[in-house]
Image (cartoon, rainbow, N blue to C red):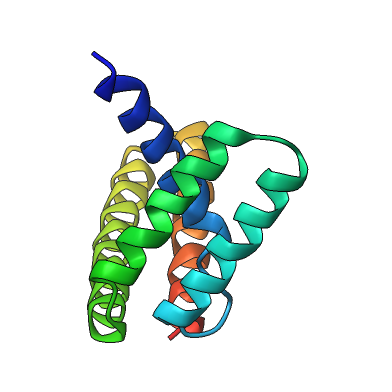
Length: 126
């Protein structure tokens, strides 16, 4: 049962790292290490011992398993997934337009624009 809190802390660290460790430019293992290092220093300065342990585990995992090729492949996978999502949103919008309900159309347009913006963001980070 001692493993469960550890897994939760580690999962929280990876979730937090998702935003912090993904720079606007091309992601590399070095940028991930730097981001985790900054987060460790910040957590240490705030006295967050559990967060520090989780981040140190995340850093060890990056050191052990990260390659720039894996990161590039993962990024391409995210782009493909987002392209599928955009296509799905376009289909949803067409269906709403065929039915002619203005409230549904506006909602579908909003979702489509959000999906397109995310796709552009991912493509810009290549």
